[in-house]
Amino acid sequence: MKTLPPPSTCKSQHGFTLVEMIGVLAVIAILASLLVPRVFQAIGDSKINNAASTCNSVKSAINEYYGKFGVLGDATGGSLALAADGDISEDWDLSTLVAGGFMEKPFAVKVGNGAIGSANTGSRLRVVNISANAAATGIAGAAADLAQGSYDLDGDGDNDVLGQLVVEAVIMQAEEQDAKELNDRIDGTTLGAALAAADAKGRVKYTVAANGKVDVRIYLAHK
Image (tube, rainbow, N blue to C red; front, side, top):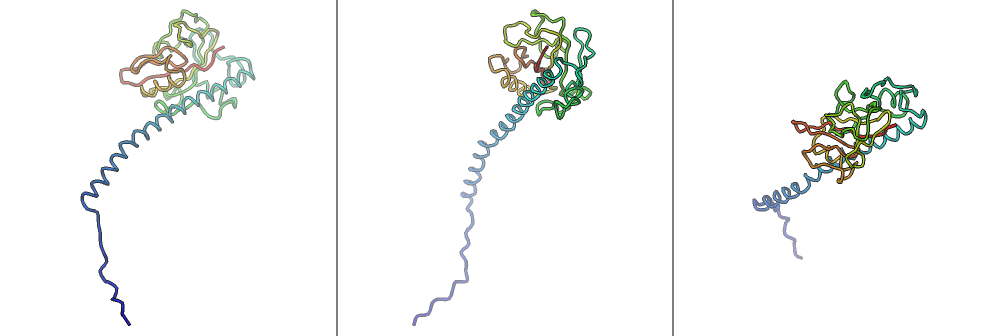
């Protein structure tokens, strides 16, 4: 009868060689170089999608408000104190749409400085008296026509926003690239300006400041 040899008391120990570790690190570096830019791109796309979606939601709230009252006024349908051309009602989202139950919270997007309301120099909605505007009213960048409320919606060089009042969204101190991408998302590339240039066509307009930040105006409605 044969007897089995006793089990070995020595266990085989095997680690990574230097070459194997270098190979693994090289693979990780390659994967990181491929994935990290896509992660940042996804984050950027998310910000732009949020801003565009929020603008669409606000337009729906404005339409609901106008459908109820037939005017662009205060929370109960009364007139705004905008007697003269160029008069502005700031924070219309909070004072009217939120107060009247048409929006749950003030206008806020992931693009810009993150602040909310004119007192904080942040994002908000505003109503501008455009009673003196004509087709020939200059279409300037956001910084040059705070009181004009003019928009070249079709890109033909003429102001297309005529009437009494215009509602616009304001986004403060956005990154230049974010402003460009938001413009292209809402207006399309044919109405967009090149990066590092002011955009004055379509529903989105802006002027690039010296620090590379931009204040954006977005047309929502006019009556």
